[in-house]
Length: 168
Image (cartoon, rainbow, N blue to C red):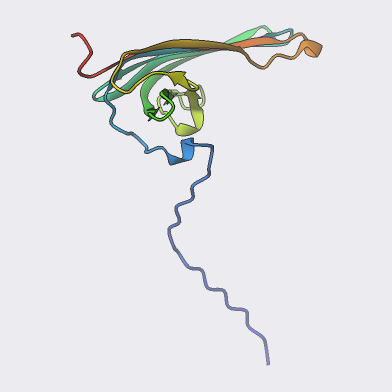
């Protein structure tokens, strides 16, 4: 008598959520009550090459539109990628602490017309209240490696007003 192995494959759609801090809880495209602009810059320079990513996000009632570019220089060759497309934006307020934070995502060079929450940049926590105009900026060193003579920085600035406080 021969033994027979039978395999049964079930096709059940699964929703997998990979936590990345609070980002995993964000809706795909949440409507927002803020309007304005967010600018981002990430630069890295070293002996072997450089990278410069720059984008601007325009936030309005219909969503977020991003424009920007990424320039990578390696072995004397420059690769330029234009980034244009819809972005993602989520604002949060902690009224108990009087702080706000937001996350924004714009297209990257791998997918220059698509945004994903895996490519977010955050405002960190800033003092502010819901409904007021929010202006701020930050700058931090990034990808710094003194042993290999590599320097880098990330910068973000924003000017966002609440829909009723925005001037036409």
